Structures are given as structure tokens and as C-alpha cells.
Image (tube, rainbow, N blue to C red; front, top):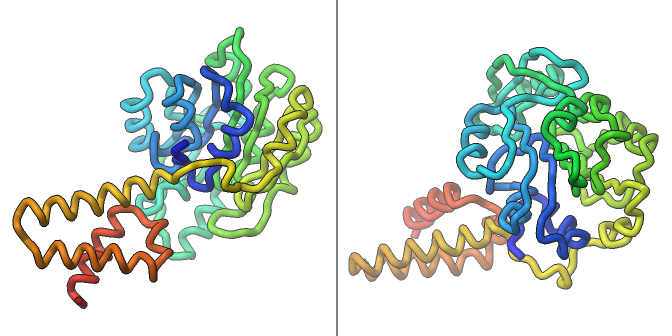
Length: 287
């Protein structure tokens, strides 16, 4: 499989849902429809679901790329109405409802901008948009510090996803924050299954057989390739094709040397093509 998710969350989920030709998800903090998406793999299989995305730019991308999904330009909270939302133009994934997180981000040198956004409870979303005749296979929560507010807004007697995964560290750190909200899931008869270094996975009691496959670390048996690696390969192929089509033999050699440099710079394998473009320019300048 191709893994699109930031921390291969889709690989973990695929273990328990690999036989499901169709399914339903709720993605709270969906962001981009492809890059770092936990749901892209499942959408491509034929699934659909609800995407919650308060950032207008990302909401527009989701609406264009996911016509089968229900895409909502709102934020989830334990109070309905309107709220300030702190967006990070240079690092959209850090955008948050939480003022303290926004302040911490600003102090770290990341600029934020404040917009007003509609807020709704998860109970309202499930009642209004979740199909009454379908089980929710999984719900993903990535809300940069507002996890407790999201979970408090859900009626787990009404909406019981088979798996709930929640980002469980303070933004931009490895410091766990699950002690603030985990009790809400345990009290709703969810079982803790795994921590992948970023997210904690919970399984409803009715599907306790999911705990064991989720608890196993990633391995060669998962047979996945990261989407970022495919993008990088395609980017390098295009660089070579452009140089060859223009008869630039020296440029071809430079690109080949740049590719060889990857063996000595494994950290480059995690970077986007935008960064690689800059890396190539720097490499050629110093060649």
C-alpha cells in the first residue's frame, strides 16, 4: 500500500480494515486531502466520511479533491457558536483553537493570524451528518491542544467509532498530554491499544480483537511505501527528463550526483519536493 499519513497511521489502520471494501471515517483536523492524510488511502479504496477543517485554504482543497466526502469548514469544540482560531500561514498544521498553544507558537518564532470560525459539537456533527445505518470505522483527532474539548463534545453512546486515534503529544514536542483527556475514552468503554510516538489508538470494547494488531510496531509485513518517497522519485525523474530533453549532459551528471548524495543524507528522504528543489540548487552551486 501507499502510506500518505505523516506517521503511517493509515498503515496501522489498514491492518484491521484491509478487508473492508467500503467504510466511513470522521477526520477532525483533516488539513490537506493528500499530504499527511490519514484518510487518503481509504478514500481511494472507495470509502467516504466527514472531514472537519477550519483552515479556509485547506477546506477548499478538500472540497475539490473529495466530492464523496462531507467537508465542513468549522472547528469542533465543547461549545457551539464562534471562536477565535489561530492559523499559522507558514506551518498550517500548527493552527489551533487554543490561545496558550498559539502563544507558545508565537514565542517559538512562528507567526499566527486570528480568524473567526464556527464551532460545533461532535455530537451535533454525528447526529446531522453521520449515516444512521453505517458504523464509523475510525475517527482521527488532530487539533493541536484542543483534544479534551473535542472528546467532551462527543456522545459515545450515540457515535461509537470502532477505532479512535488521537494526537497525544504537545505540539512540536514528544511530551505526552493524554492524561488530560484519556479518561473520557476509557469511561466510554474504549480500550487503549497503542502509542506510535505521536498518536494513541483506542478500540471500542465491542471490537477488542483490534487491540493486538494495532499494538504491533510497523514491520516488513506491512508492505507499504511512503507517498513522500514516490513524490521524490518522480521529482528526480522529471529533473533527469528535462535535462535529457534539452541535451544538457552536464546537468544530467549533476542530477545523478545529487541522487547519489541521498545515500549520505538520509534525512533528505523526509523532505518535500519544494525543499529538494532548494537542495539541488545549493548542491549545484557548490559542485
